[in-house]
Length: 222
Image (tube, rainbow, N blue to C red; front, side, top):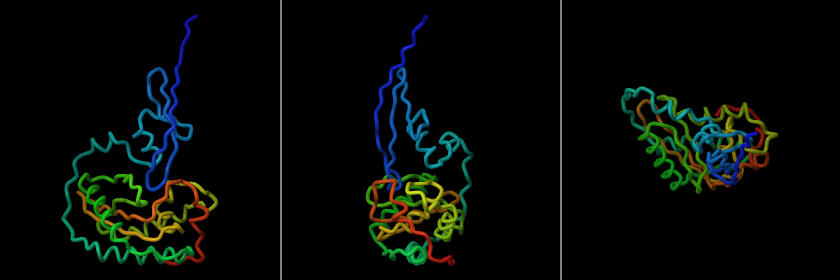
């Protein structure tokens, strides 16, 4: 009988995205590295993070037809930051948490990342240890309604769950009780506007949702 030897080399690691840390492990099986998260095996780090955060397949994205740029628009970042701050604070009031202040450093950091995203014309994760980052690309002029769009995730948020969930991540960032300040950036890509909002201070774990994401005391329009 032939004997098959399978050699395991296990390494445990942690990575942080959007202000949350995630534990995973790497196994070398017969010389091949496998990334393991939540009991599922992946062939690469990128494949694993794509699965966790719902990113589209990178190969599909890179082989799509080049998009024809749309007409350039003027974006008033100062006015939009004031608007977004008002809307977020309205949401936070509904969820019984303190208002946020506008942070210039957060604005600058968000603007820099929005411009980088627009330059590469794709949504990108920012491995920022100073702020929690919320980001998304929107059609013109839908980008001005980003806060309203993100708040719609509240309908699917599970208030009994204490850990991170991708389906309501934007909403959770806006109403996180321990957050004190924010700042947003805006940049136009080939066809969409990239919106990036940073919330401080950052947090380095994926738990605490029951304590920091409170149920609304009322339902109001923002």
